[in-house]
Amino acid sequence: MAIELLMPALSPTMEEGTLAKWLVKEGDTVNSGDVIAEIETDKATMEFEAVDEGVIGKITVAEGTEGVKVNAQIAILLEEGEDASVMADVGAAAPAPAPAKTAAPAEAPAPETAVATPAPSAPVAATGERIFASPLARRIAAQKGLDLTGIAGSGPKGRIVKADVENATAAPKAAETTQAAAAPAPAAAPAGPSADAVAKMYEGRAFEEIKLDGMRKVIAARLSEAKQTIPHFYLRRDIKLDALLKFRSQLNKQLEARGVKLSVNDFIIKAVANALQQVPEANAVWAGDRVLQMKSSDVAVAVAIEGGLFTPVLEDADMKSLSALSTQMKDMAKRARERKLAPQEYQGGSFAISNLGMFGIDNFDAIVNPPHAGILAVGAGKKQPVVGEDGELTVATVMSVTMSVDHRVIDGAVGANLLNAIVDNLENPVAMLA
Image (tube, rainbow, N blue to C red; front, side):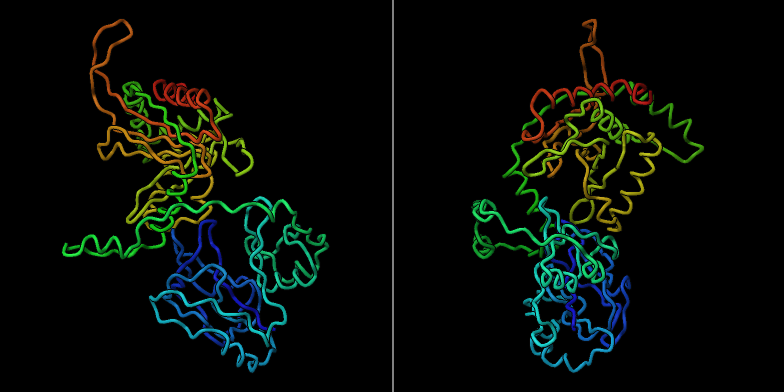
């Protein structure tokens, strides 16, 4: 029977994407794992692989179409040997391919003559994590009453395919509890003035209207949600950098032959990673109805790109040398600016760093990026007068930092201990290598 190919969710935050390019045409035979299209997400262009074998019977969304919703039909796959005549009714049910660079068409209804049972929506595990399964696998699971959360996928990247469901011994789906059904929907945030209302305010004034791309939409949605739902509090410290700058200069002379040049930001990453081990209760993330305390220090670092930003994650940063962190960070920053990072490279982490010191910013407050428990906003290091330990007035290079914290995860005293550990690591950099 005909199988609908649906717009995939290539990242947890993806709600819609652009069908950038088809790599197959109608009538082509494809196998599981074949790359058949390129999809532009809010962050990058990703390859879309077939999870079932068959013949491309109809392409229902033209390449170049923007705003295609996740799980919207984009093509129909015929099983091997299936008569193409079944496409007559499918073609009538599905919308005509939209012209390039237009809004996404409405999602086509399931083909009635080709598929006896409509494809259920993509399942979600109890933890809120989306389960990836082919449309055919979901239909078979629904018909057999199987719970996909108990089935291991053998397809690309763990995707559940037809064979997995046919051979499954998973228990039938449990009935939804009354409590889950009765859970109240969250109150909608107050809407601001409409686009037309805002534009009307500026009638007679010259302006250029800039269309929001996927990345800017996601940034707006996620940070608005973060500021509305995360109870932030802020901790501030000044850090004396003279010892670090001297130590960095010595190390860079020794590393010059290897082509490694350490930045102050590399030391900050290492200091944060070590501090998360020194204050393990702060190395945690918010997971809705629980807190996940992490074992390793996975540190995200904000990288500005044209039109937005990425936060590549340096996993196990506490276990890596300064030179390894420096090399990895430079590579990830370069690929971030080229939008070539894979989703798993910018998702996760428990804590983030945002450094605007190179732009001359003295200090600022950053917004926690969920599910992180905190973010360190780093300002510029500047020479200024300070009072020494013996009361004498001296000049030192001082850097101001502000740590934004999610109070649901980290209390004030724990946050203070974490920031004190970061400061101590940076003011005594040799100890970080011990």
